[in-house]
Image 1: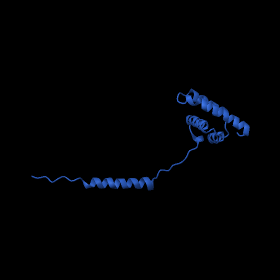
Image 2: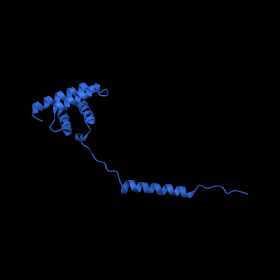
Image 3: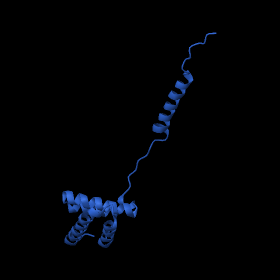
Length: 121
């Protein structure tokens, strides 16, 4: 008795093509991903500290205190220097960002001077 050579099941390939087509249809047309931006004010406290470090590092790189002021004002309005100093102390106590503490502290000092010179809050 001779057996027929086995052929690949055509229904498997058809199912994969239909599944791929339906997946693309649902993913791009019916339920597409909706992106939205969040502001620094809505960040968790720990991430606000990280944001403060990033603003301090950016200030250290470009030395533009006006840009640093506008970035911090997105996180808190009016800017509270005492709260920023408290955040910097938390950064100092953190093992991850301890090396960034001095740059952040210098940024906060320059920010306070900038705010007192320009009368901004």
